[in-house]
Length: 397
Ligand SMILES: Cc1cc2nc3c(=O)[nH]c(=O)nc-3n(C[C@H](O)[C@H](O)[C@H](O)COP(=O)(O)OP(=O)(O)OC[C@H]3O[C@@H](n4cnc5c(N)ncnc54)[C@H](O)[C@@H]3O)c2cc1C
Image (cartoon, rainbow, N blue to C red; front, side, top):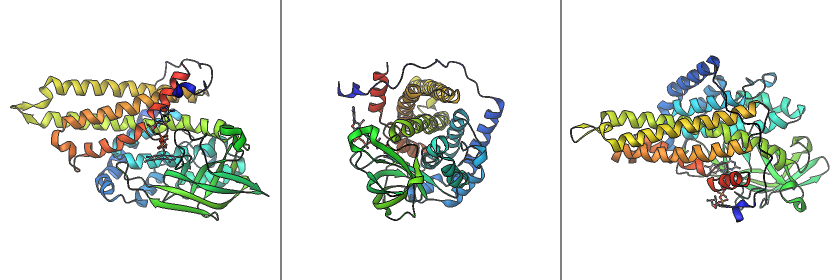
């Protein structure tokens, strides 16, 4: 029963069953997809192999408005709601076929920026959001530590101690997306150990703060076009004015609000990736001849395509439902957990099936299904594992 010890988050919310994408959103989706297909996809294979970061592409994404999409207009963004932002990440993933860069976008625009946009002070919003919206600053989130992952709040070791008008932070954060390239990180640290998960605070940390260090870049299986590292804090000085929300309210307020965005918008990217993988699988199945006919004529191949399409459609509805609930001003802890669990597992299954359709080419770099297969693997781990999603859903059912 260990995994069911998670406390219920809140009473069931209002059921959301109706939503539609306006013409404006559909046009925007198409323009993001085209941009990603023309500007990002051509170099995705090469960047995946080299693991190199391309600032030029990041600048183009900034110019396209993608880096500050959900930042309010008064702070230089587009003020897009959760549904519009989800659709943009879906379209970017589909068009680019670049899971890593889509992850870097999500780490910056959602988990590294939304805590400030949603809960920051006026001072913090004015100081940081305009730079984050244009991409002048790149951001990320520092929650996971070498010794604390699924039990992020309970096992957190990073400490912040108040000294005058500053906090002195010691500790480290593990697997941080955008770590090696970021200018700013939203970092969680324990301010009152006796309160457990209710004794955590959230800080905006700049890379030039004394005591901030970036660990070595991690070599990854997939998402290789994103940059990942440890962050190390040695007597790092953070001004009190950089604390988001009240002391000790970090996990309950900032964490929860941000995780719902993460489990909706970042997971929306997996829908775009599923669409891309299915299109690749169908294309290959139509042109590959075996036993004298295209393999798409074989029922075993049609079964994979049909089941994948069914999972894609169900995934899309779950994400749009979760996003719509957030846009109605309701929290969506269960919807976003269900969406995260279902979509990321479906993406792995589709990667397997569409890879299987490619036969030996599934194993060869120059076929994009190989990269998509590796990229999909992170989905059921990052941002809360499938096992943890199941615990949350079961505890709230
Ligand atoms: C490429 C990459 C990018 C990432 N980016 C970021 C980032 O930008 N910022 C950030 O803060 N973190 C980031 N992460 C960290 C990610 O969110 C964690 O890896 C994830 O939350 C799991 O934590 P863990 O790796 O410590 O696994 P663990 O928590 O050690 O889990 C190991 C296994 O035990 C299972 N398990 C643990 N507890 C339970 C339980 N109660 N019941 C059942 N099973 C359980 C897990 O499901 C898993 O299968 C990233 C990770 C990767 C790999």
